[in-house]
Length: 365
Image (cartoon, rainbow, N blue to C red; front, side, top):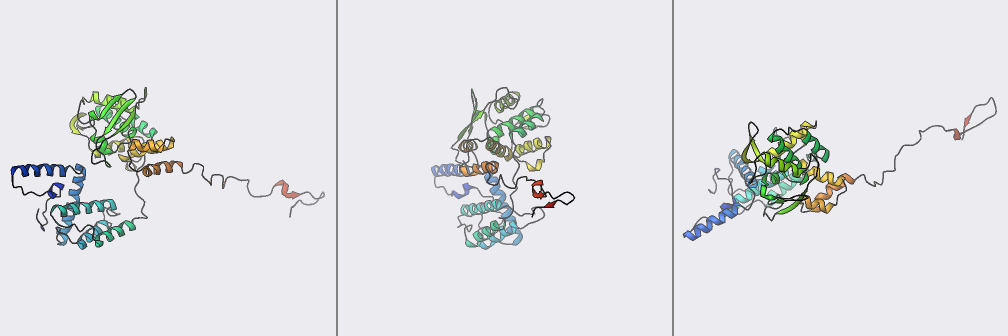
């Protein structure tokens, strides 16, 4: 890795492990250490970091500044420019993206043996200011796929095709398991254990469990239902000839399964197609809509919040509480009996008095 050229290779944690063996034993130790270092983060995270580093390199090349080691002032400038609105991104880069950019820059500096400037006041203050400027901007929250929506999406599929069977299994298992799209894609046949009442599903890696401690959840079967997630998965596995490895596969043209694992983008596409098929706006939905929908539906059904958190595997129950609160804000509301319908304003018979014949009726004072 060069110290200051702009053609520095993308960062990997393996670069943090030095390469100066003095013996075959040390060389083997270095190889092992680099392998474990590369496994410190998910492959998708490394790809994102690599894209982030390339973005920083591109900006440095365009402005003529040194990327490695970079000065705190130049990193602050880069973040500020990334946050600015442009034709491609009217709202600018999201704060979460900027934080990830900063994480990639930090790793690159550590890998090259430099002190990282990511925590310098010039950088942290600019990032804090960007975050503060977005406080009043509503987040683009995707719509949930509720129980009825999932069933209607399944009804719209062509179950005479293998792709239709796979998509049904993706929709129903993703909903019933409150699974993230990455978890659906990483699922192997060996992660499904059939029980009398459904599946025990093992999640080996997740967004909040990079160390792979594994978590197990139950997927209840629904006997006699055309929307049973257990039956849908089993029918897909048999029809698709899937006996091991990835549960969900990509397709070649012509309704032919490939040996390649389904991608997270494909899960999103399945949900969006389903939304369009039932007359909803596809842009309002994403893969996360399945997970969001399970929690929203469970909250509407009055489910126990701790059981909900156990199924969704949220580390902080307060995150799940947000779903429950959204669905119960009107329950026992203190203003429920206020501003209700009343008799129209005007005269009533009790408000007038009778006068002698030939006289007028006058209102009471």
